Image 1 (cartoon, rainbow, N blue to C red):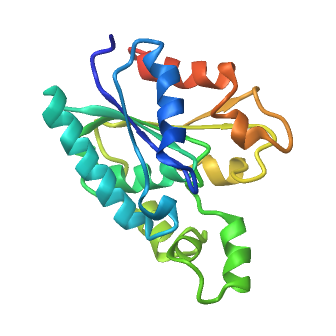
Image 2: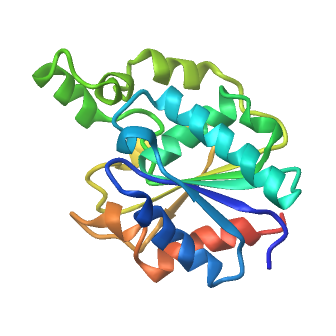
Amino acid sequence: MQTLPVVVVNGLGAPLVAAKAYALTFRMRGFHVFPVGLRCLGFGDPRESARDVAAHVDRVRAQTGARKVNVIGMSLGGLVGLYYVKCGGGASSVERFISVGGPLNGSTISRTLSHVLPLGLDLVTQTRPDSDLMREIAAAPSPPGVRMFSVGTRGDVLTPRTSWDATGLEARETPYGCFPVGHWLLFAHPGNLKVVADLLSDPA
């Protein structure tokens, strides 16, 4: 069993069972994993979702007695997790943060949708590359003591490299993706699962 608990933050539109299935692949490798879903399936304000993640991390720490946890963010969960670590007080509770296919620089898809839905959802507004949320994240300093990674792959039409390769995070591009299903292969291909597991285990 690995020493630190791992909190897995779910992605947009996915029920909690999706995070549980992803978490199971790490439990089978010996990790102690605690998945958490996003409120309104992620269609609300990412800041509110980050507060939910903070509460979940506190519960996990209380349950396990661990001083810190590692956090994996799946897709939108990567952006929520990054906000939690950089802007939401999570730095003192997190040792490693790994975004997997997260739109850390914002989403060009959201920019397009915001023109179609001018009154749009909080999610659409806040994940635009020029949103207040994205500016807040970019302006926040990288937290000392937290090692941060961003994992992406080829053929990801939802979060291309311009979206997931963010300043302050160590980028890891895997070869286990292909157009147009690269995004979903990040959470299903054994090679991509091993990349994330290795980042959790790397003693460096």
